[in-house]
Image 1 (cartoon, rainbow, N blue to C red):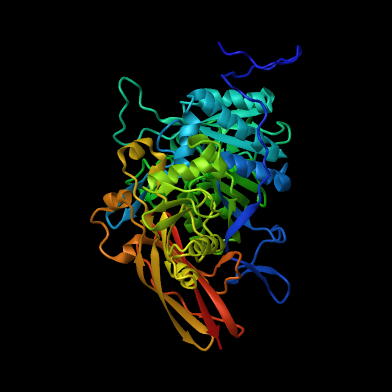
Image 2 (image 1 turned 135 degrees about the horizontal axis):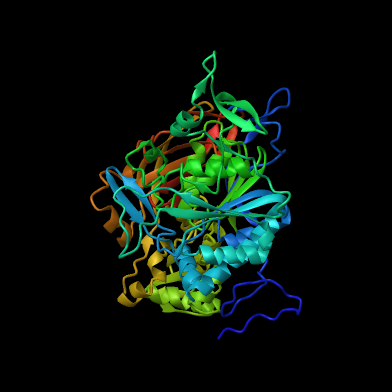
Length: 612
């Protein structure tokens, strides 16, 4: 029997109770790290703000504003946004997990073959944590996030929670508890129709609908732009059966004994109801033109659905947010409908997919890609390998087949004649960190070092590593820690393989202050999982590349996307040579090239050129 939480005698709410329920949420304000900026703003001679390539920004665009894609656990993203955005978000749409294993998977295309990518380490951990205690842990996860979203909403703001039949009752109850039942505006049924060839599981009826719980911060103040749907042809034929001398169709209406005419061309139509049956499932309609919307995410929602949500519950210039972003449909539609936007997701590839969709929009307004600081390290260690950092090092060193050592500042193990350095779980291994590990190696007269990491600092790759290691004459290998370390079955079976970083080879052609960059080879960090999945679909090295971009004048802090080429599901071509870039001033320039492979792993390469 679960003991209800303590409450006052005047407590009059009905609420869900589950073992271990907590009513307070941890509010940690973490700094955002800017990973990349796209479409920077310049000023015209008249002072009008415009995109770098010439498109003007609207008058309602705030000075210095950039839309935001944020990679990280949305609980920490939400709490970190509160300092700046509490009470300022006008519409939040979320499509949270429905208790399925497909929440973090996606499909990518190699030629004519589709390859499924399973969850990353952090995504897999998040999924396990969400359901570790069944519906109780799911309810706690969602309650924490709904509470933070409530605090972000503006006084006239609206929250739309997209849910399936599996968890509708849970989320409705949570919304009533946190927002009060009087602020539940509607429970909209999205009746998307039965997919072609759809079958019921066992003896169940085929599922053909989902819910959009509509919750207002304040019921009397929330935005609703009433929408009218056109009459059906049958309705028009039956009701508007008369024509006047000008051929205008009308119907007769009688009120208080007076007969009047209601003309068809003056009628608004049918007011939108709580049952939306005119918008079909994107991925179910694979034989129609809607195929162009597909991004590889099994839970992707159609743009028509998000267009209605954003049009009806916000106004141009409003701030729209989605904290379970997925493939990025919400932010893409918000951009088209002249709203500002924030999108967040735990999946690295989700952010990458959204970035490509935004780049495909002509004159897309400025946006930036952010990451929350090193918070997942303690979360991962505490959940799986103990509270102490030493236990994390023990775990990784043992999986690498090495022996744990102590008494060093930056060295954690030894394997044969090679020392081992282990990077943090989410924070990138930096050049400074590598330099310290190499120097400590050299001080101990050990001339070989293996560095194990999840992520790597911008520009840190095998070429840069050789430059850092040359002074000490230490042989250094950089190896990725594989996602399988989080799979207990893989650990027990010994199926853990560390693999070296991807290598990108470049050539550059200069003419005075002009520069062209070409990728001449790409050697991906291929683990057993990736090799097995792609099979014979890779025919040449460039097939591994999904996207690459260039910052022609890297400032050492933020990658400014100055040029890019990428594949889409409809167009698999990729340019391996950049457009020419011309420098306005002479001098030494630092160039950073970012390459993202078909599974979302990124590799960077840094070059230095002299512009005459």
